[in-house]
Image (cartoon, rainbow, N blue to C red):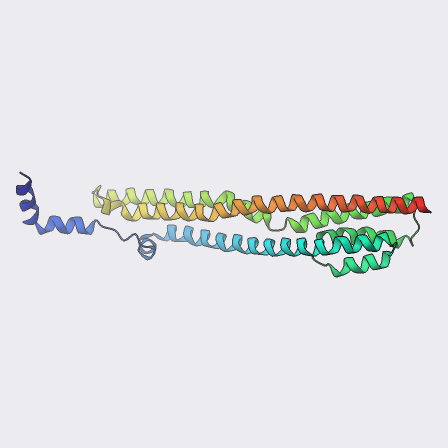
Length: 244
């Protein structure tokens, strides 16, 4: 019985050709070729989102690394200058650490204190404290720059890919209706669009979400460091007022 069926298939080359036509090219180039214009547009949008998120990742990593490095060098130097009551030297040290988040905050407090001509009073301390708070808010905004982009890409990229998936499935059903065939060859193009856009959306979203959470943790750590530095500087001003 089986031999008879094989002999029947071998005697009909049309049947073999039909099976061959149903095979699809699932290489990257083949998938791109089989994609429709809408699916290609979705892929281009996801590619732009991936480049944008990668640029933000690199920028934030370099910024945070420089801030961490300069702050570690700045903290002991300015502490030593303030311990010796060298206010001008402390300000010069802070000015040289342009990328340090601690230096930006401390500089604002020291300059406000200096603007009162070194007169240590309750008003000058309160003025310096307000300057520190304003500077902390500004630096916090600088640290979070670009993180909203990562959050947006991480949240929307899967849905953009899902949109391509839905359109790919619709394309597959249209091919079935046009060709009046339910074989794999009839739906291979539409399913390939769905698979590619879904996978691409996840590949864009996952790194964006992970790096957003990582950088958000770094920003929180920097905020704690700035709060501690501000408190220590205010304590220094209070001690100076007691000496006088």
